[in-house]
Length: 325
Length: 294
Image (cartoon, rainbow over all chains, first blue to last red):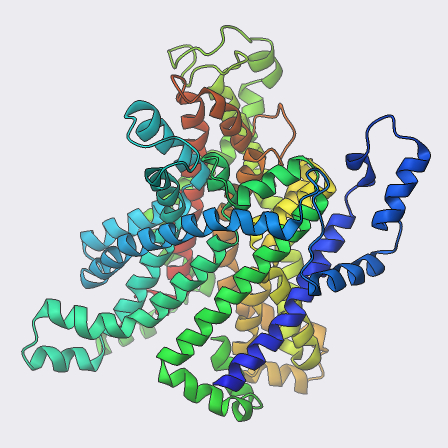
């Protein structure tokens, strides 16, 4: 197990390096020199040249990339062009609000999706199943920024139950969390349903019922426990995704998180902030995904066995097919 | 059982896979509804310029500002006095064309990459899939934002940004589909006949991998419409004053109190179109692969 974690961590390094390169490459495509954001309009040639020399804007892409990695290893993601604040510091400042939103959203999604998914699976092909699937289809299709606006109109402006924006009091998380949670709920409901459908038909369910376990107890104790692993896995992946920053929800609700700061940085063309935030977002996503995988392996003994035999199995094409399927 | 077998064997006409899929799809009511909605949206986006002339209907007719929905303006008018109904109709073509081109871009790049990765294996597969990991590591909205903010705001850049985000999905889907068919007998037979790798991939392997790719394409169309509208909402999409749904929502944000219709109708149009694509996607998945239908 320890070896697996180390191996996975080592595999993460090239991915992060790749992400940094891709982000660097994309940002390099931007027309115009970043100097224009940093100097006043009537700056002299010498002043401009001094800034170019200081930041090394004239160096080739690979040199700047190498320098960036070197700084990154020292915990330095550069400074914002506009506020001169260190990017890492700014990121950590904003991460709290994003984490708060992400965790509330995923909890809300799980609370909504578990009963829906279980109910849909139990009532498979009946109208109740159809209704649950319609709810999940709606959640999957609704653009969350529009949902956010509609919630603001109804619950903040007309009914006045919740504040429309910001993060001043505890209650202000309700609308953003619901907005962000709806999409996650839709996906989790589908995962729960299909996972439950698999376990509900298993032989041990028949055994349990034959032993006299009630229908509800058999579903909750026997089927759900076995169906939980893919559900937990899917929730973890979703959490990783929203932890990177929910740009749209944060923008709609003026939530002071990472996503909104990113949009502000884009408006200001503040390249170090954009680059740093994208890289941190990808890193956090990757780290959470890795944690989920490790927990997953820990919980499910079948996967642990797979790791032990992975080396041998990898050689045969059949194992590869199964893995892909 | 035997009755059924007799009945099918007695029938001289055999349905092709396409006909069989269409038969199953046509029995799926929600998929048919979705398809009908998509057709209507396509008709609107093509026909809008035939029935309405944007310049004379919207620009020249600019009248009273912020009129609530009424007989003359079914969806009301916006802050500049433009008729929202006509703008929503015109918005369909932006959403459809952007998502269509974006998905096409990701198909053209993603499918061959996935096919090569699955077919060749080894170093090539590793290279492609590690590159895919990098794209997957960046949340797709981040990638899209980065691309548009670097390349600048334009319709083409929006298409590229949304398209690049879906490449990794298609690479993954194609690769796993290719892995399941590449060891089949007909591939071996083709190789024994001396077919080149390229011929085998495009003539024998890809046609047998189409089902998951088609399903994914439909879902991605819906997703691309949302992504494009999201970017426009953030001010990174099609430049103003084009009647794009996301941009209309963004403009309506300043008039939420009292003028909620400004945000309601473009959003509804967006929602209905995306639902339609998702319904067809679900239906296609069930029709193409009944095994998946639980």
